[in-house]
Image 1 (tube, rainbow, N blue to C red):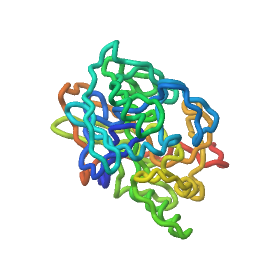
Image 2: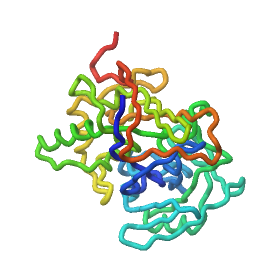
Image 3: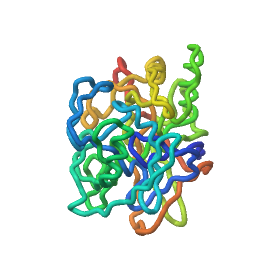
Length: 326
Protein backbone atom coordinates (compact mmCIF):
# COMPACT_ATOMS: atom_id res chain seq x y z
CA UNK A 1 0.00 0.00 0.00
CA UNK A 2 1.05 3.60 -0.50
CA UNK A 3 1.13 6.60 1.80
CA UNK A 4 2.08 10.22 1.26
CA UNK A 5 4.85 12.05 3.08
CA UNK A 6 2.88 15.05 4.27
CA UNK A 7 5.52 16.75 6.42
CA UNK A 8 9.19 16.34 7.30
CA UNK A 9 11.15 17.35 10.37
CA UNK A 10 14.86 17.92 10.78
CA UNK A 11 16.78 19.12 13.84
CA UNK A 12 20.52 19.74 13.36
CA UNK A 13 20.87 20.30 17.12
CA UNK A 14 19.45 18.09 19.84
CA UNK A 15 16.58 19.84 21.67
CA UNK A 16 17.26 23.09 19.81
CA UNK A 17 14.78 24.68 17.38
CA UNK A 18 13.96 22.34 14.51
CA UNK A 19 14.35 23.45 10.89
CA UNK A 20 11.35 25.08 9.23
CA UNK A 21 9.62 24.13 5.97
CA UNK A 22 11.71 21.00 5.37
CA UNK A 23 11.29 19.77 1.80
CA UNK A 24 13.64 16.78 1.92
CA UNK A 25 15.59 14.54 4.27
CA UNK A 26 18.54 12.50 3.09
CA UNK A 27 19.88 9.10 4.08
CA UNK A 28 23.53 8.28 3.54
CA UNK A 29 25.88 5.56 4.76
CA UNK A 30 25.74 7.05 8.27
CA UNK A 31 21.94 7.04 8.43
CA UNK A 32 19.73 10.14 8.59
CA UNK A 33 22.01 12.90 7.36
CA UNK A 34 22.59 15.86 9.66
CA UNK A 35 19.83 15.11 12.16
CA UNK A 36 20.73 15.75 15.83
CA UNK A 37 24.35 16.11 14.75
CA UNK A 38 25.21 18.59 17.51
CA UNK A 39 24.22 18.97 21.15
CA UNK A 40 25.00 20.96 24.27
CA UNK A 41 26.51 19.16 27.25
CA UNK A 42 27.15 20.10 30.86
CA UNK A 43 30.62 21.24 31.90
CA UNK A 44 29.89 21.31 35.63
CA UNK A 45 27.47 19.31 37.81
CA UNK A 46 23.98 20.76 37.40
CA UNK A 47 21.13 20.12 39.82
CA UNK A 48 17.89 19.82 37.86
CA UNK A 49 15.03 22.15 38.73
CA UNK A 50 12.29 21.45 36.15
CA UNK A 51 12.54 17.87 34.90
CA UNK A 52 13.64 15.74 37.85
CA UNK A 53 14.19 18.25 40.66
CA UNK A 54 17.23 17.43 42.74
CA UNK A 55 18.80 15.00 40.26
CA UNK A 56 22.35 16.01 39.40
CA UNK A 57 23.53 16.04 35.78
CA UNK A 58 27.22 15.26 35.56
CA UNK A 59 29.69 16.92 33.14
CA UNK A 60 29.29 15.58 29.61
CA UNK A 61 25.58 14.82 29.96
CA UNK A 62 23.33 16.17 27.23
CA UNK A 63 21.05 19.16 27.69
CA UNK A 64 17.37 18.84 26.86
CA UNK A 65 14.26 20.97 26.68
CA UNK A 66 12.97 18.79 29.52
CA UNK A 67 15.16 20.80 31.88
CA UNK A 68 16.10 23.75 29.66
CA UNK A 69 13.16 25.00 27.54
CA UNK A 70 15.41 27.98 26.75
CA UNK A 71 16.90 25.73 24.05
CA UNK A 72 13.84 26.47 21.89
CA UNK A 73 15.34 29.94 21.32
CA UNK A 74 18.52 28.54 19.73
CA UNK A 75 18.23 28.17 15.95
CA UNK A 76 20.93 25.93 14.41
CA UNK A 77 21.63 25.54 10.70
CA UNK A 78 24.00 23.05 9.09
CA UNK A 79 26.35 24.53 6.50
CA UNK A 80 29.29 23.07 4.62
CA UNK A 81 31.77 24.69 7.00
CA UNK A 82 30.05 23.57 10.20
CA UNK A 83 27.13 24.99 12.16
CA UNK A 84 25.58 28.42 12.43
CA UNK A 85 23.77 29.42 15.61
CA UNK A 86 21.27 32.21 16.02
CA UNK A 87 19.40 33.39 19.05
CA UNK A 88 15.87 34.34 18.01
CA UNK A 89 15.83 37.86 16.62
CA UNK A 90 19.62 38.17 16.37
CA UNK A 91 22.24 37.57 13.68
CA UNK A 92 23.62 34.08 13.19
CA UNK A 93 27.25 33.18 13.87
CA UNK A 94 29.28 30.48 12.14
CA UNK A 95 31.16 27.96 14.24
CA UNK A 96 33.45 26.01 11.90
CA UNK A 97 33.42 22.23 12.34
CA UNK A 98 36.31 21.07 14.53
CA UNK A 99 38.48 18.25 13.18
CA UNK A 100 37.72 14.87 14.76
CA UNK A 101 40.87 13.77 16.63
CA UNK A 102 41.72 12.14 19.94
CA UNK A 103 42.59 15.59 21.29
CA UNK A 104 39.27 17.20 20.31
CA UNK A 105 36.96 14.41 21.48
CA UNK A 106 35.50 14.39 24.97
CA UNK A 107 33.33 11.95 26.98
CA UNK A 108 29.58 12.57 26.62
CA UNK A 109 26.37 10.76 27.46
CA UNK A 110 22.80 10.55 26.14
CA UNK A 111 20.56 8.60 28.47
CA UNK A 112 22.12 5.12 28.77
CA UNK A 113 24.73 5.70 26.07
CA UNK A 114 28.22 6.90 26.93
CA UNK A 115 30.78 7.66 24.25
CA UNK A 116 32.84 10.43 22.71
CA UNK A 117 31.96 13.53 20.70
CA UNK A 118 33.95 16.35 19.13
CA UNK A 119 34.19 19.50 21.25
CA UNK A 120 33.42 22.53 19.09
CA UNK A 121 35.68 24.97 20.91
CA UNK A 122 35.69 27.83 23.38
CA UNK A 123 33.86 30.36 21.17
CA UNK A 124 30.84 28.06 20.83
CA UNK A 125 30.95 27.33 24.57
CA UNK A 126 30.97 31.05 25.39
CA UNK A 127 28.01 31.63 23.06
CA UNK A 128 26.09 28.82 24.71
CA UNK A 129 26.82 30.05 28.21
CA UNK A 130 25.48 33.50 27.31
CA UNK A 131 22.10 32.25 26.17
CA UNK A 132 21.63 29.06 28.20
CA UNK A 133 22.79 30.71 31.38
CA UNK A 134 25.37 28.28 32.76
CA UNK A 135 28.66 26.64 31.64
CA UNK A 136 28.07 24.32 28.67
CA UNK A 137 29.99 22.94 25.69
CA UNK A 138 28.83 22.32 22.13
CA UNK A 139 29.81 18.93 20.73
CA UNK A 140 29.41 17.26 17.33
CA UNK A 141 29.16 13.66 16.20
CA UNK A 142 32.39 11.72 15.78
CA UNK A 143 32.94 9.61 12.67
CA UNK A 144 35.85 7.90 14.39
CA UNK A 145 33.76 6.97 17.42
CA UNK A 146 30.21 6.69 16.02
CA UNK A 147 27.11 6.02 18.05
CA UNK A 148 25.08 2.91 17.22
CA UNK A 149 21.45 2.11 17.99
CA UNK A 150 21.36 0.24 21.31
CA UNK A 151 25.15 -0.02 21.02
CA UNK A 152 24.78 -2.56 18.20
CA UNK A 153 26.41 -1.80 14.80
CA UNK A 154 23.98 -4.24 13.19
CA UNK A 155 21.12 -1.86 14.03
CA UNK A 156 22.80 1.10 12.33
CA UNK A 157 24.02 4.52 13.39
CA UNK A 158 22.12 7.22 15.20
CA UNK A 159 23.02 10.83 15.95
CA UNK A 160 22.23 12.49 19.27
CA UNK A 161 18.53 11.59 19.12
CA UNK A 162 17.35 10.00 22.36
CA UNK A 163 17.83 6.48 20.99
CA UNK A 164 16.69 5.90 17.40
CA UNK A 165 17.34 7.52 14.02
CA UNK A 166 13.84 8.15 12.61
CA UNK A 167 10.52 8.98 14.24
CA UNK A 168 7.25 8.65 12.32
CA UNK A 169 3.76 9.99 12.98
CA UNK A 170 0.63 10.66 10.96
CA UNK A 171 -1.70 13.51 10.11
CA UNK A 172 -4.61 11.35 11.32
CA UNK A 173 -3.16 10.87 14.81
CA UNK A 174 -2.22 14.49 15.35
CA UNK A 175 -5.65 15.58 14.20
CA UNK A 176 -7.19 13.25 16.80
CA UNK A 177 -5.13 14.97 19.51
CA UNK A 178 -6.17 18.41 18.30
CA UNK A 179 -9.82 17.39 17.99
CA UNK A 180 -9.69 16.30 21.61
CA UNK A 181 -8.12 19.58 22.72
CA UNK A 182 -10.67 21.64 20.81
CA UNK A 183 -13.49 19.59 22.37
CA UNK A 184 -12.12 20.68 25.76
CA UNK A 185 -12.09 24.34 24.73
CA UNK A 186 -8.36 24.52 24.05
CA UNK A 187 -6.57 25.78 20.94
CA UNK A 188 -5.12 23.24 18.48
CA UNK A 189 -1.36 22.74 18.59
CA UNK A 190 1.11 22.97 15.67
CA UNK A 191 2.74 19.83 14.32
CA UNK A 192 6.18 20.93 15.53
CA UNK A 193 5.20 19.60 18.98
CA UNK A 194 5.81 16.07 17.69
CA UNK A 195 9.44 16.81 16.67
CA UNK A 196 9.00 13.84 14.32
CA UNK A 197 11.05 13.27 11.18
CA UNK A 198 8.24 11.95 8.98
CA UNK A 199 4.51 12.70 9.13
CA UNK A 200 2.46 10.47 6.84
CA UNK A 201 -0.96 10.98 5.30
CA UNK A 202 -3.22 8.45 3.65
CA UNK A 203 -2.79 5.73 6.26
CA UNK A 204 -5.60 4.34 8.37
CA UNK A 205 -6.69 1.27 10.28
CA UNK A 206 -10.07 -0.31 10.85
CA UNK A 207 -10.28 0.94 14.43
CA UNK A 208 -10.99 4.71 14.29
CA UNK A 209 -9.60 5.11 17.83
CA UNK A 210 -6.19 3.76 16.84
CA UNK A 211 -3.17 5.81 15.79
CA UNK A 212 -2.34 4.22 12.43
CA UNK A 213 1.45 4.63 12.60
CA UNK A 214 1.40 2.09 15.45
CA UNK A 215 0.62 -0.61 12.89
CA UNK A 216 3.15 0.29 10.20
CA UNK A 217 5.75 -2.43 9.77
CA UNK A 218 7.97 -0.92 7.08
CA UNK A 219 8.32 2.16 4.88
CA UNK A 220 10.26 1.62 1.66
CA UNK A 221 12.04 4.45 -0.16
CA UNK A 222 13.64 3.83 -3.56
CA UNK A 223 15.94 6.18 -5.50
CA UNK A 224 18.28 5.58 -8.44
CA UNK A 225 18.43 1.83 -7.92
CA UNK A 226 18.96 2.10 -4.15
CA UNK A 227 16.30 0.92 -1.71
CA UNK A 228 16.15 1.99 1.93
CA UNK A 229 13.73 0.34 4.34
CA UNK A 230 12.56 2.03 7.53
CA UNK A 231 11.46 -0.62 10.04
CA UNK A 232 9.23 0.02 13.05
CA UNK A 233 11.13 -0.70 16.25
CA UNK A 234 9.85 1.01 19.38
CA UNK A 235 6.86 3.14 20.37
CA UNK A 236 7.93 6.59 21.50
CA UNK A 237 7.12 7.34 25.14
CA UNK A 238 6.51 11.07 25.44
CA UNK A 239 8.27 13.37 27.89
CA UNK A 240 7.30 17.04 28.57
CA UNK A 241 8.82 18.31 25.29
CA UNK A 242 5.53 18.07 23.29
CA UNK A 243 3.99 20.25 25.99
CA UNK A 244 6.58 22.93 25.22
CA UNK A 245 5.94 25.80 22.81
CA UNK A 246 8.77 25.45 20.29
CA UNK A 247 8.90 29.20 19.66
CA UNK A 248 8.69 30.57 23.20
CA UNK A 249 9.68 27.74 25.56
CA UNK A 250 6.39 28.12 27.46
CA UNK A 251 5.15 24.80 28.83
CA UNK A 252 1.54 23.76 29.43
CA UNK A 253 0.61 20.08 29.96
CA UNK A 254 -2.12 19.92 27.34
CA UNK A 255 -0.50 17.59 24.81
CA UNK A 256 0.36 14.79 27.21
CA UNK A 257 -2.90 15.21 29.06
CA UNK A 258 -4.66 14.68 25.74
CA UNK A 259 -2.66 11.52 25.13
CA UNK A 260 -3.75 10.17 28.50
CA UNK A 261 -7.39 10.98 27.86
CA UNK A 262 -7.16 9.24 24.47
CA UNK A 263 -5.96 6.02 26.10
CA UNK A 264 -2.33 6.31 25.03
CA UNK A 265 -0.90 5.23 28.40
CA UNK A 266 0.68 1.80 28.39
CA UNK A 267 3.77 -0.39 28.28
CA UNK A 268 5.89 -1.93 25.54
CA UNK A 269 4.96 -5.47 24.54
CA UNK A 270 8.66 -6.40 24.40
CA UNK A 271 9.31 -5.79 28.09
CA UNK A 272 12.52 -7.84 28.03
CA UNK A 273 14.09 -5.38 25.60
CA UNK A 274 12.39 -2.11 26.52
CA UNK A 275 11.37 -2.51 30.16
CA UNK A 276 8.05 -2.35 31.98
CA UNK A 277 7.75 1.39 32.67
CA UNK A 278 4.41 2.98 31.78
CA UNK A 279 4.62 5.65 29.08
CA UNK A 280 2.41 7.98 27.07
CA UNK A 281 2.93 6.80 23.51
CA UNK A 282 2.86 8.97 20.43
CA UNK A 283 4.76 8.35 17.16
CA UNK A 284 6.96 5.37 16.42
CA UNK A 285 10.74 4.99 16.31
CA UNK A 286 12.11 3.34 13.17
CA UNK A 287 15.44 1.77 12.25
CA UNK A 288 17.15 2.43 8.91
CA UNK A 289 18.05 -0.62 6.83
CA UNK A 290 20.54 0.48 4.18
CA UNK A 291 21.24 -1.30 0.89
CA UNK A 292 23.97 -3.92 1.25
CA UNK A 293 26.17 -1.96 -1.12
CA UNK A 294 25.55 1.65 -0.19
CA UNK A 295 28.04 3.85 -2.11
CA UNK A 296 29.98 6.17 0.17
CA UNK A 297 28.82 9.33 -1.58
CA UNK A 298 25.21 8.22 -2.17
CA UNK A 299 22.25 10.17 -0.79
CA UNK A 300 18.76 8.70 -0.83
CA UNK A 301 16.19 11.52 -0.57
CA UNK A 302 12.94 11.41 1.38
CA UNK A 303 10.81 14.03 -0.34
CA UNK A 304 7.87 15.94 1.02
CA UNK A 305 4.81 15.08 -1.03
CA UNK A 306 6.27 11.81 -2.31
CA UNK A 307 4.44 8.50 -2.30
CA UNK A 308 6.10 5.65 -0.40
CA UNK A 309 5.36 1.96 -0.03
CA UNK A 310 4.06 0.97 3.40
CA UNK A 311 3.47 -2.47 4.88
CA UNK A 312 1.38 -3.10 7.98
CA UNK A 313 1.36 -5.46 10.93
CA UNK A 314 -1.74 -6.90 12.57
CA UNK A 315 -0.31 -5.88 15.94
CA UNK A 316 1.25 -2.83 17.47
CA UNK A 317 4.25 -2.87 19.79
CA UNK A 318 2.66 -1.53 22.96
CA UNK A 319 -0.36 -2.38 25.07
CA UNK A 320 -2.68 0.05 26.85
CA UNK A 321 -2.46 0.14 30.63
CA UNK A 322 -4.89 -2.28 32.22
CA UNK A 323 -5.19 -4.54 29.18
CA UNK A 324 -3.94 -8.13 29.24
CA UNK A 325 -2.29 -9.99 26.36
CA UNK A 326 -2.95 -13.67 25.73
